[in-house]
Image (cartoon, rainbow, N blue to C red; front, top):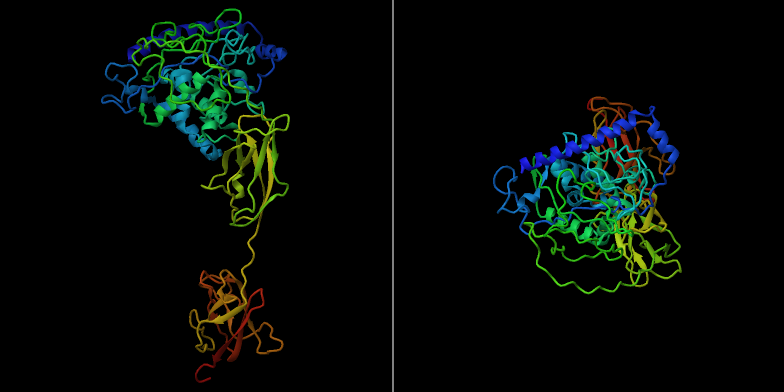
Length: 600
């Protein structure tokens, strides 16, 4: 395997070197910045928003083996199993490529936890797009040792996209080509995305966005798959995301096959030791009879021959018809090439299936109900967000996935502590979010409802969380009738005063209580300036601090009880009063007796 990889690498290096020399000669013949200036003068338009990420180009159609993906015995699982090139070694992922997928999953889990992106999905796409960066032919930073380029996007079997990057990424000055291990077209990398700033990302933190770097490409692919509020644990969202990469049902089935395979188990292998796929889907047949994307110009031309026309190959001319709206493929299609490359059993050509009627196009999400959402902190909202999906004629659209999203900072959550959920519209076109519970933080926020995979404007709901009402207490009482005494200059016993608060006969929890040392005047009690006092709460344990005769911020505990802080005395003897009050008017007067020191 290693020898085979080196031979392929050498052939690829030779062809790449020639291409690099030609491009260098073209660049050197112009003044600095001439290429950028020429590209600026051409000002090619950005691709349509629904252009597939890889431009709809060719892809590997090798399917995973039927046996379980467990590491074979031996050297890190790099040997073949039972003589089959599609044995358990297919479960081995090159170390740097595997690290890139897992790093992308971790980053997106932090920025968009509601997406639930599994790294195995990135691995499935990476397998189909580039054979895991040609078996892990990357350097220590994750950049491919040779460019991985797709065929020219010249409209012959693929999308037609004139050069948008001046050859910066793909070395092509006339048309764009898919680039790198995740096969982004330059126009999508730099100009695509919902805000036209491009899907390009910096996954390895080197300050650059390079589609030839597997860390950057994996993170960018993850951002795309999660776009539009998708929840990839939802089958509809998952299918829409994959079809946005390459709009083909065959492509969808192939990626899902590898995704399921990798989820059953993988193992790490050294870079450059990955199994290289060989079967490739041919281009769409162009209207003029030519086929775009030959083996020499297609992806992987430097690492593997094109077997799509050989016996046992998977090339059948055209890929399956793109099936937007048919996003529930069954089991992976295994009627393609056998694991050993043999000719599959001949089956009669099935009769053409009639096209299903076109789905109504969702153009709007209308709020149901005019009132905004309200709740008390910690409680459920009185109503759930609800929308109606409509087409251009105002008729309901059934079976459309709608994503409800909350800002993480709001503290509110859907069941399962989720900040986003996807709900499919019913026959009446209605989608209702599950019960929404408020957090403890009062304030206002918005709930957004978006049509997954559609361009309809989002529906926005205002939501307000009100503070919990202050706990009430209509009665305060001591828990002991023991007389409270102390000697002047000495403190009362620790926890001498404990009280219980109730409201309508039930324990009152969390009730604010104020404690004040007052004069012994039943008609006009005011804060006393002598006698018992509390220690200054701001003073340290070793400091006495200034005497404090009013304490606020005291609250009853989970049992409705409150132990008053330690009470100190000065040199004055006599009978004093401690008054305890609540905001609801409950009052308790506690007598404190201070005796003169002996012999005074």
